[in-house]
Amino acid sequence: MKSTIKLARVSILWSIAMVSGCENLSTNLPSFSSTNDMRATKNEALKTTGSLFAEQKSAVETSRILSATGFASVSVQPSKSINQRRLLAMRAAKLDAYRTLTEQIHGLRLQGETTIGESVVTSDRLAAAVQGLIIGAEVNQIKATSSDTYQVELSVSEVHLRRIISNYGRGI
Image (tube, rainbow, N blue to C red; front, top):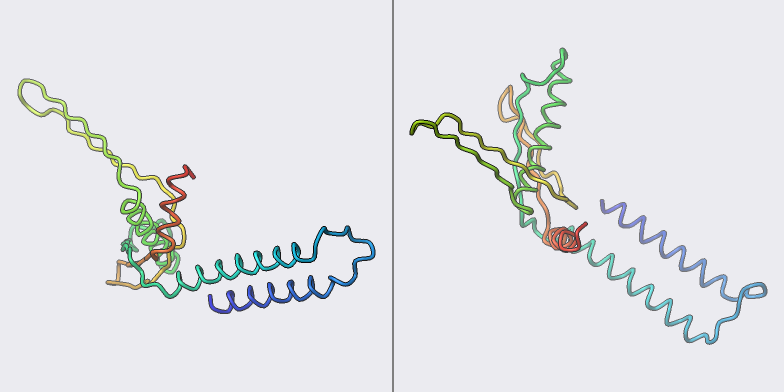
């Protein structure tokens, strides 16, 4: 992740250097009203880029504030190969952890129905559903808790949690 950030910084700095190196080659370029306007635009772009890097850095450095754990069994996975079943169990545990994170952030919709006939419960049904967007979740740990069970721990930083909530508020 740190190498990706460094690569992004180098790419942006290289792009800025190329743009500022091309400033003097204005023979076929349209003229601007003022050089100060161009400098102001560059300064705004640099500030915006800097704030994006600062947000990314704080997301990495911020302690994780919301976490979830998911579990899955190896033996119930649909495959003949034990290695394939293990991989499927890890994937299922990860999805279970994502579902738990989604429940924590967006809530859980419950629907229940009970039927009573002659003062006796004849039917009792309960359904649960969860729907939401998770951004920036990080896998903290994948481990085998027994020979047949995998556990996955996910977490979301405060920065990403704020972004999820703001996107939810906008209807995204």
